[in-house]
Structure formats: C-alpha cells, structure tokens
Image 1 (tube, helix red, strand yellow):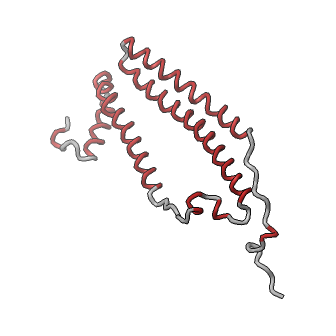
Image 2 (tube, helix red, strand yellow):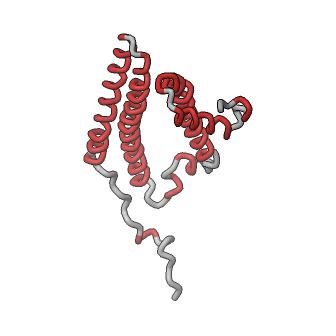
Image 3 (tube, helix red, strand yellow):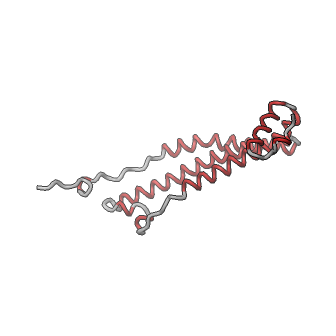
Amino acid sequence: MPTSNPQLNLGNRSAPRRSGGVFPTVFMVLFAVPFAGFGLLAIVDGIRKVVAGDSAAWAESMFGVVFSCVGLGIIWGTIWARKQAKKTAELQARYVDQPWKWRADWAAGRIKSSAMAQPFLFLIMGVAFAGMGGLLTFGLLPGELQKSKSRTARAGVNFSFRRRGILEPRCSPR
C-alpha cells in the first residue's frame, strides 16, 4: 500500500495561524512615539533658532525631520502590517485548502516580480547618503574651515577633493 504524501493529505493540514494580537501593535507604537515626539520637538526648536538668527540651526531641524520620519514610519508600518495580517488570516481561514488564493496576485494568476526592489532601495539610500554628505560638505564645511583655520581640516578636504579628481594637483596650497 503506497504511503500518502503529507503535503497532499488535506486531512493533516494544521489550522491557519492567528494574528499576533494587540500587544505587539501597542508595543511598537509606544516604541515609536518618542522618536516622533522628540523629532517634532527638534524641528520646532530648530525653526525657532533659525528665526532668531542662528543660521546653523537648520541641521537641528534636519535631525528632527529624520527622527520624526523614523517614528511616524514605524507607527504607520505597524498599523499597516496589522491590517495586512488580519486580511491574510481571513483569507487563510476562508481558503484553507487553496493556499494560492491567500495572495491577491497569485489568485489572479499572476506572479509579481520583485527584481527591481533591491536596486530601487539602493537608489534611495544612495540619494539620501549623497544628499546628507553634500549638505554637510557644502553647507557646513566652508564656514568651519574659515573659522578654525585648521591645517588638518584643510588637508583632509584637499585630499578628499584630489582623490575625486575635483582639484588639480597644481592648484593645491603648499
């Protein structure tokens, strides 16, 4: 007598798993609230300082934007994931014996390609890092170099620009 394949034996299937409950959602929201709150406070404080005449306080506002985006992103992602988990659990309960109906694209007979997800993420990261580096290099560094007259800072900038081919070797100070 041939043995049956456990993957095809529908009588041995386990019940669909339950979603995580409310505690993980509440925990993640409470974890993210300080990020969002302190980020918003830093934005407001930075704007107040810029209005008062401190031109370097925009960096504090940018710091606040990053932190508030992280906090609000965690809150949004947690709520979105909770909704998706409920929807998936409902589909799993409705179509216990038809797992291809658990995802909308599979149910429609399509398979979505995720080939562009990683390059798109790398593009976003590259633009963000280049933007932050450019803002710091061209926004803060010239003023700091003029204030400090540091030979070490000048040598570092000179080496960095030379390495990138921006400055000609004959233009550097001796």
